[in-house]
Image (tube, rainbow, N blue to C red):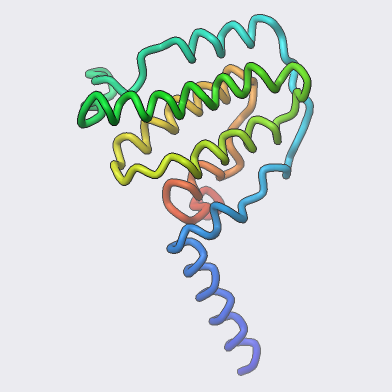
Length: 154
């Protein structure tokens, strides 16, 4: 009975952390860390990504674009700032944890409730992951978006 009560409390704590968003802030970015091969070509591709017009309508993905220009520009600023932080920081600190740490800080400050913009932000961050040669965010994106690491269950 004692063990059952502990399991129920543990499950309740996990659910509360996911629903409240606490699990995102506690989510580690250092697990699976490794050195990245940062090249001038990688930095140039990141700069190209930064220079793109972001959060505008995209018929290919059925993304309608941000609701208005002010929201679009604010979202683009967050995406561009995190990409610029990678360009500035990766040559001196070429680590996967550095990339995920920058992403975590950017996502923590991206507070829109619009699901389309949240998904689109992840689209740009996933492109940056690909450019950096990183396979996945170790559930960081899933925990930010949904509160739980659903990838662990599927």
